[in-house]
Image 1: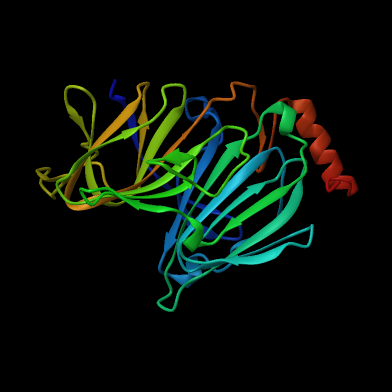
Image 2 (image 1 turned 90 degrees about the vertical axis):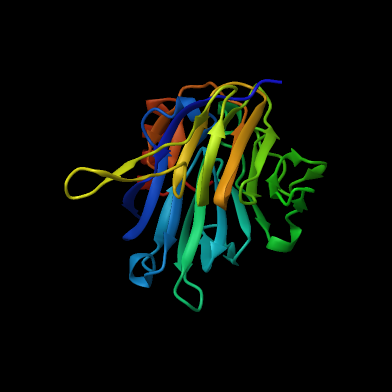
Length: 300
């Protein structure tokens, strides 16, 4: 067994998307080869309705899959194929855009105005870029929730883990998507196959992810007015940890415990050509998609 060393730690950055939704982005656009098969990861967490209510009005997708996981509030969605629905706390939507859809996502807060969720984009291989669109809407009660004898809790959204299989299936990159909670002070080792790229995204509590020799978790030093160091943070809220190769990930939870997403998938290793939410293999394919958007033949 070999513990995956931490390749780097990224603090997600504030950005604005859609019609003015304020969110934090951990990675996306440009060169995302080290995350392959994943393309983008957003954390849309807010307790100010004015910062998210404008939502993500009608826009196209082609050549990718989008995975939406809601923790608080709701997301109303609809598309050009006539699908309509609402995602609530604990629900997941895995949307395979394939050859193309137009859709919208409109966040609504809970009764306290809170909205929290994540969106992950996964690439499709060239052989499936133009597959038929597909939805997998998974209500919270259908997601296995496994508790280990030390109190570690894992929601298995996709893939096999601890003898349970997540309800999302038929995904080209054979991903594993886990929501992991480790109690305060506990150290936990989780298996991750060596042929996968893997990352963790911390969204509650703090802790240290370790390699075989030393903890890696110090992110920032907060300085006072005279330049003195006031706080040294461990790996904490809104931090993404990108792992190197190995077959295990080890985390030691801090005093508040730690909760994070652990995501892994087999690299596709194909060229990536971007135009926002349209992701193909070549610029010629992008130009074709844009021409189809202009002449009204994008939806097949």
